[in-house]
Length: 501
Image 1 (cartoon, rainbow, N blue to C red):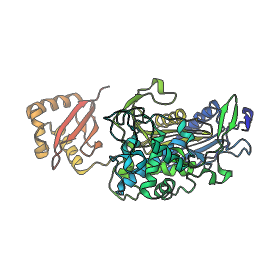
Image 2 (spheres, rainbow, N blue to C red):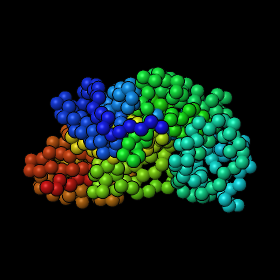
Image 3 (cartoon, one colour):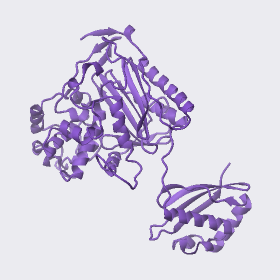
Image 4 (cartoon, one colour):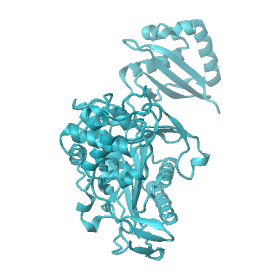
């Protein structure tokens, strides 16, 4: 293989797009400059010939930047249209296509996978009481198959006939299915075979026609060699203080687990589409897959784990509760809220994506160095955006029932008596604290803070509850309101207390 010395490394060959309106333009420019430094340092430290990263907000590519070169011979700079293999970030495309076939009535997630891949029927399971692998187990990596990085990556070009022979011969198990989560590229290759068998077309064609084409991802697909050479980022491996060119792997039976090639411009369309599934709402649901089905990608298995946040803040941050969902890892972060992420490691390439559905924002990065997953840089970038005020929570509309109850709560405080609520109280309300007790509590609270402006907006945490803060004469009051599951909804809980200094 050709060898290249570090001295030819080019760091900045950049193209930026204007930021969308997401606050003060100057503030955003300063934040993006900080993010540039994060990725520039990452590229230098990790010996990455070239990378591209992007920030998606409100369905748009808010910012994108290429750094370094596509290849070390022509030295073409990386641009937002440069094509990278994204490795295991492919799995979300495969998972959503499986869910779409389920929606279309062509398969069932709870059915044994062997119903759709007959070669699996003669597999020998590890114990007599082991259940058969379900389609859902393959999606969640709970099928009992052994972790197979990096063996699975090298199977990408495996011919279909050879894959059939592998399946027919059976495979060893690491665990009985349904006991634990263990990452399996083989499992997602089987999902690719299921897509082929159920749809009646090769999985690559089905995934492309189901998702990529409707989203306008014209430069995205599984046939890496078919793309224009002048746009392709050549993959490299860093060893012995120099770069080695990596031969591009062709398309084959394992591509459903990691074979997609795409550009930053195309991938931003995919991210914007996924993020548009949140929050649940009324209105047109144009697809290509239903919003509710897209949200299923965040449904993890029953094997959650604690992990440290990626990036420089990880060691000092609170730990995340995480689980593998469907082609994405779902985790709850104390600063970023709900997160959906996935890395991609591949001979010649690395990638990472982070989605923040509660804010409609995502960050992603592609590189052309083997297994250079950019998780640390992506998560550091997201924290920079968060702490800089770029992330704005998506507002949830206050429905009529909650609005009525909230006005009632204000009247209760102003009058100092729950009796003015009339029939707005649920049957438990006065059983938990009688009217006389409420009058005493309200009088004491009003003595502490005085009259309050009860017109402040309530922040809903669902259709039937929310939090609020009132500004008062000598302080503030924080409150929580929760309605009962009755028709019509009534107030089951009202909490009011002085806000602590």
